[in-house]
Image (cartoon, rainbow, N blue to C red; front, top):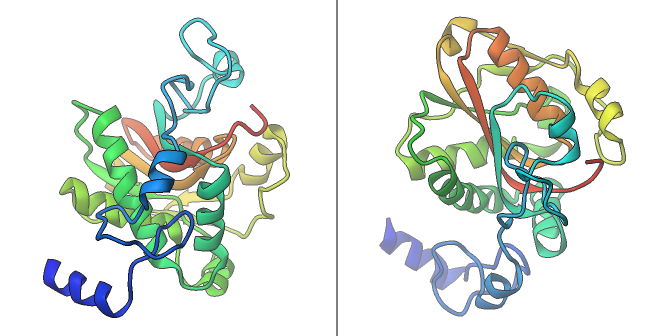
Length: 242
């Protein structure tokens, strides 16, 4: 496999996922030295439940939303903060037509964060956030599924489960506040076969966590179907609406 990758890189040099400039040297994570230096990981000053970055320490490091109410998921971890090169990479992945390689790379990076932050937790299964049939037709792939596949491969876990389904197409979440986002996704997800998740410790994967509304709703239906606990992991997180 390494030989094939080297040959592929010779004929089509790999690009940095953030600045999309050709890489001068082979990089396992497809990040150029400059971006690796300039784009920091989501630091430790983040909410211990939803991973939103915090400017000020609030006691035990919980954001305002998580301090006020209970989340359906136990915890979320995110590799990066959604801004600058990270935001550009995610947008290009979703709307740049067939940029599956970015999702695969982000998945390998998310796997590192899962290993670092979820030490000692044994996941019975990995589940990805689904998209609607309409979005699948438009995009041709589900970026969260690709990320989840890469996470499973890196962690030596079984292939991710498509047990979650999007019951209907919802308006885009961008631009909506927390309350609006929660209303937008309420009842939008279902579980195909509840027995698959019963008594399971689940790792739920998505590309971005903005307010946590989607992860919350997906976690809620998974737990309603019998999952014991749901942990989440995303490539990036924002502080929007929190």
